[in-house]
Amino acid sequence: MKILIVEDDVRLSAALAHILKEQGHEADTVADGKSGYEWAEGGYYDVIILDVMLPKMDGFEVAANLRRKGVGTPILMLTARSTVSDKITGLDSGADDYMTKPFSPAELMAHIRALTRRKGEVEFETLKYADIVLNLSSFDLSCFEKSIHLSFKEFQLMRVLMSNPGMTVSKETLIDRVWGASSNAEDNNVEAYVSFVRKKLAFLESVVSIETIRRAGYRLTAPEGADDVEAAANAESAQ
Image 1: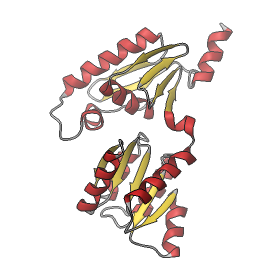
Image 2 (image 1 turned 90 degrees about the horizontal axis):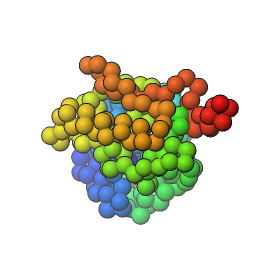
Image 3 (image 1 turned 135 degrees about the vertical axis):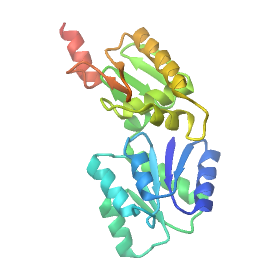
Protein backbone atom coordinates (compact mmCIF):
# COMPACT_ATOMS: atom_id res chain seq x y z
CA MET A 1 0.00 0.00 0.00
CA LYS A 2 0.99 3.63 -0.52
CA ILE A 3 0.05 5.76 2.49
CA LEU A 4 0.16 9.53 3.01
CA ILE A 5 0.93 10.83 6.50
CA VAL A 6 -0.15 14.42 7.20
CA GLU A 7 1.36 15.25 10.59
CA ASP A 8 3.25 18.33 11.81
CA ASP A 9 4.99 16.53 14.70
CA VAL A 10 8.24 15.51 12.99
CA ARG A 11 9.08 12.74 15.44
CA LEU A 12 5.62 11.21 15.30
CA SER A 13 5.56 11.46 11.52
CA ALA A 14 8.89 9.64 11.28
CA ALA A 15 7.69 6.99 13.74
CA LEU A 16 4.52 6.40 11.72
CA ALA A 17 6.51 6.10 8.49
CA HIS A 18 8.87 3.62 10.17
CA ILE A 19 5.98 1.47 11.42
CA LEU A 20 4.38 1.38 7.99
CA LYS A 21 7.61 0.61 6.15
CA GLU A 22 8.33 -2.24 8.58
CA GLN A 23 4.99 -3.70 7.50
CA GLY A 24 5.99 -3.49 3.84
CA HIS A 25 4.11 -0.31 2.90
CA GLU A 26 5.27 2.90 1.24
CA ALA A 27 4.82 6.14 3.18
CA ASP A 28 5.04 9.79 2.18
CA THR A 29 5.02 12.50 4.84
CA VAL A 30 3.96 16.15 4.75
CA ALA A 31 3.82 18.59 7.66
CA ASP A 32 0.90 20.95 6.97
CA GLY A 33 -2.72 20.71 5.87
CA LYS A 34 -2.35 22.65 2.62
CA SER A 35 0.45 20.37 1.40
CA GLY A 36 -1.50 17.34 2.62
CA TYR A 37 -4.49 18.35 0.53
CA GLU A 38 -2.35 18.97 -2.55
CA TRP A 39 -0.62 15.59 -2.23
CA ALA A 40 -3.87 13.72 -1.55
CA GLU A 41 -6.14 15.29 -4.18
CA GLY A 42 -4.74 13.13 -6.99
CA GLY A 43 -6.29 10.06 -5.34
CA TYR A 44 -3.26 7.80 -5.78
CA TYR A 45 -2.86 6.90 -2.09
CA ASP A 46 -4.52 3.86 -0.55
CA VAL A 47 -4.92 5.45 2.90
CA ILE A 48 -4.43 8.95 4.35
CA ILE A 49 -3.39 9.34 8.00
CA LEU A 50 -4.46 12.85 8.92
CA ASP A 51 -3.80 14.90 12.05
CA VAL A 52 -6.41 17.46 13.09
CA MET A 53 -4.28 20.29 14.48
CA LEU A 54 -2.23 21.30 11.44
CA PRO A 55 -0.76 24.59 10.19
CA LYS A 56 -2.22 26.29 7.08
CA MET A 57 -5.34 24.05 6.96
CA ASP A 58 -6.70 21.86 9.78
CA GLY A 59 -7.51 18.19 9.28
CA PHE A 60 -11.27 18.72 9.30
CA GLU A 61 -10.96 21.15 6.40
CA VAL A 62 -8.55 18.88 4.51
CA ALA A 63 -10.97 15.95 4.76
CA ALA A 64 -13.98 18.04 3.78
CA ASN A 65 -12.19 19.55 0.77
CA LEU A 66 -11.03 16.13 -0.44
CA ARG A 67 -14.55 14.74 -0.26
CA ARG A 68 -15.96 17.77 -2.10
CA LYS A 69 -13.40 17.14 -4.85
CA GLY A 70 -14.58 13.54 -5.09
CA VAL A 71 -11.47 11.90 -3.60
CA GLY A 72 -12.62 8.69 -1.94
CA THR A 73 -9.33 7.60 -0.35
CA PRO A 74 -9.95 6.23 3.18
CA ILE A 75 -8.97 8.78 5.84
CA LEU A 76 -7.81 7.85 9.34
CA MET A 77 -7.80 10.87 11.65
CA LEU A 78 -5.07 10.56 14.24
CA THR A 79 -5.22 13.18 16.98
CA ALA A 80 -4.95 13.99 20.68
CA ARG A 81 -8.46 15.52 20.60
CA SER A 82 -10.67 12.80 22.04
CA THR A 83 -14.00 14.46 22.88
CA VAL A 84 -17.18 13.06 21.35
CA SER A 85 -17.84 16.36 19.57
CA ASP A 86 -14.39 16.27 17.95
CA LYS A 87 -14.98 12.73 16.73
CA ILE A 88 -18.36 13.67 15.30
CA THR A 89 -16.84 16.69 13.54
CA GLY A 90 -14.08 14.51 12.08
CA LEU A 91 -16.44 11.84 10.79
CA ASP A 92 -18.91 14.41 9.47
CA SER A 93 -16.10 16.18 7.58
CA GLY A 94 -15.39 12.99 5.64
CA ALA A 95 -13.01 10.89 7.75
CA ASP A 96 -13.65 7.13 7.75
CA ASP A 97 -12.09 6.37 11.12
CA TYR A 98 -10.79 8.24 14.16
CA MET A 99 -7.95 7.18 16.46
CA THR A 100 -6.64 9.13 19.44
CA LYS A 101 -3.05 9.53 20.65
CA PRO A 102 -1.24 7.77 22.23
CA PHE A 103 -1.61 4.55 20.24
CA SER A 104 0.22 1.28 19.72
CA PRO A 105 1.63 0.15 16.36
CA ALA A 106 -0.67 -2.89 16.46
CA GLU A 107 -3.71 -0.66 16.96
CA LEU A 108 -2.67 1.57 14.06
CA MET A 109 -2.27 -1.37 11.68
CA ALA A 110 -5.62 -2.83 12.76
CA HIS A 111 -7.36 0.44 11.90
CA ILE A 112 -5.63 0.57 8.50
CA ARG A 113 -6.62 -3.03 7.72
CA ALA A 114 -10.22 -2.23 8.63
CA LEU A 115 -10.21 0.82 6.36
CA THR A 116 -8.89 -1.10 3.36
CA ARG A 117 -11.45 -3.86 3.88
CA ARG A 118 -14.23 -1.25 3.81
CA LYS A 119 -12.92 0.16 0.55
CA GLY A 120 -13.47 -3.20 -1.12
CA GLU A 121 -10.97 -5.78 -2.26
CA VAL A 122 -11.46 -5.40 -6.01
CA GLU A 123 -11.38 -1.62 -6.04
CA PHE A 124 -8.41 -1.56 -3.72
CA GLU A 125 -6.26 -4.01 -5.72
CA THR A 126 -6.68 -2.53 -9.21
CA LEU A 127 -6.92 0.72 -11.12
CA LYS A 128 -9.00 0.74 -14.31
CA TYR A 129 -9.11 3.16 -17.22
CA ALA A 130 -10.67 2.52 -20.64
CA ASP A 131 -9.45 -0.94 -21.69
CA ILE A 132 -6.50 -1.27 -19.27
CA VAL A 133 -6.26 -2.59 -15.73
CA LEU A 134 -3.30 -1.98 -13.42
CA ASN A 135 -2.86 -4.59 -10.71
CA LEU A 136 -1.55 -2.82 -7.60
CA SER A 137 -0.19 -6.02 -6.08
CA SER A 138 1.55 -7.72 -9.02
CA PHE A 139 2.52 -4.60 -11.06
CA ASP A 140 0.91 -6.20 -14.12
CA LEU A 141 -0.79 -4.03 -16.76
CA SER A 142 -3.56 -5.81 -18.67
CA CYS A 143 -5.73 -5.16 -21.70
CA PHE A 144 -8.40 -7.84 -22.08
CA GLU A 145 -6.51 -11.16 -22.49
CA LYS A 146 -3.03 -9.64 -22.84
CA SER A 147 -0.88 -8.71 -19.85
CA ILE A 148 2.62 -7.37 -19.28
CA HIS A 149 4.67 -6.83 -16.13
CA LEU A 150 5.87 -3.30 -15.32
CA SER A 151 9.07 -2.37 -13.55
CA PHE A 152 8.62 -0.54 -10.26
CA LYS A 153 9.10 2.93 -11.76
CA GLU A 154 6.93 2.11 -14.78
CA PHE A 155 4.26 0.97 -12.33
CA GLN A 156 4.53 4.14 -10.24
CA LEU A 157 4.31 6.28 -13.39
CA MET A 158 1.17 4.51 -14.61
CA ARG A 159 -0.34 4.62 -11.15
CA VAL A 160 -0.07 8.41 -11.06
CA LEU A 161 -1.43 8.82 -14.60
CA MET A 162 -4.28 6.34 -14.10
CA SER A 163 -5.26 8.07 -10.87
CA ASN A 164 -5.63 11.31 -12.86
CA PRO A 165 -7.09 10.25 -16.24
CA GLY A 166 -7.51 13.08 -18.70
CA MET A 167 -5.62 15.47 -16.42
CA THR A 168 -2.21 16.92 -17.24
CA VAL A 169 0.45 15.77 -14.78
CA SER A 170 3.63 17.82 -14.77
CA LYS A 171 7.10 16.31 -15.00
CA GLU A 172 7.86 17.81 -11.59
CA THR A 173 4.92 15.95 -10.06
CA LEU A 174 5.99 12.70 -11.70
CA ILE A 175 9.53 13.10 -10.39
CA ASP A 176 8.17 13.71 -6.86
CA ARG A 177 5.80 10.71 -6.96
CA VAL A 178 7.97 8.21 -8.84
CA TRP A 179 11.54 9.05 -7.82
CA GLY A 180 10.95 11.13 -4.68
CA ALA A 181 11.34 14.85 -4.03
CA SER A 182 14.93 14.42 -2.78
CA SER A 183 16.10 12.40 -5.80
CA ASN A 184 18.42 13.61 -8.55
CA ALA A 185 15.99 12.55 -11.30
CA GLU A 186 15.53 15.00 -14.17
CA ASP A 187 13.13 15.53 -17.06
CA ASN A 188 14.97 13.05 -19.27
CA ASN A 189 14.33 10.30 -16.71
CA VAL A 190 10.60 10.96 -16.98
CA GLU A 191 10.78 11.04 -20.78
CA ALA A 192 12.60 7.69 -20.86
CA TYR A 193 10.03 5.94 -18.65
CA VAL A 194 7.12 7.45 -20.55
CA SER A 195 8.68 5.95 -23.68
CA PHE A 196 9.00 2.54 -21.98
CA VAL A 197 5.34 2.56 -20.92
CA ARG A 198 4.16 3.70 -24.35
CA LYS A 199 5.87 0.66 -25.87
CA LYS A 200 4.08 -1.59 -23.39
CA LEU A 201 0.72 0.00 -24.19
CA ALA A 202 1.47 -0.62 -27.87
CA PHE A 203 2.31 -4.26 -27.10
CA LEU A 204 -1.05 -4.62 -25.32
CA GLU A 205 -2.81 -3.00 -28.32
CA SER A 206 -4.62 -0.70 -25.92
CA VAL A 207 -6.70 2.29 -27.03
CA VAL A 208 -5.06 4.26 -24.22
CA SER A 209 -2.23 6.66 -25.01
CA ILE A 210 0.06 8.95 -23.06
CA GLU A 211 -0.21 12.38 -24.62
CA THR A 212 2.62 14.89 -24.34
CA ILE A 213 1.39 18.37 -23.39
CA ARG A 214 4.19 20.68 -24.47
CA ARG A 215 5.78 22.59 -21.58
CA ALA A 216 3.17 21.17 -19.19
CA GLY A 217 3.58 17.40 -18.82
CA TYR A 218 1.64 14.30 -19.78
CA ARG A 219 -1.92 13.04 -19.64
CA LEU A 220 -3.60 9.70 -20.14
CA THR A 221 -6.22 9.72 -22.89
CA ALA A 222 -8.57 7.28 -24.63
CA PRO A 223 -11.14 7.58 -27.42
CA GLU A 224 -14.54 8.92 -26.41
CA GLY A 225 -16.79 6.12 -25.20
CA ALA A 226 -13.94 3.93 -23.94
CA ASP A 227 -14.18 5.20 -20.37
CA ASP A 228 -14.02 1.81 -18.69
CA VAL A 229 -13.14 -1.80 -19.43
CA GLU A 230 -16.72 -2.94 -19.83
CA ALA A 231 -17.58 -0.16 -22.28
CA ALA A 232 -14.48 -0.90 -24.33
CA ALA A 233 -15.29 -4.61 -24.41
CA ASN A 234 -18.85 -3.94 -25.52
CA ALA A 235 -17.64 -1.59 -28.27
CA GLU A 236 -15.16 -4.16 -29.54
CA SER A 237 -17.72 -7.00 -29.62
CA ALA A 238 -20.19 -4.81 -31.50
CA GLN A 239 -17.78 -4.26 -34.40
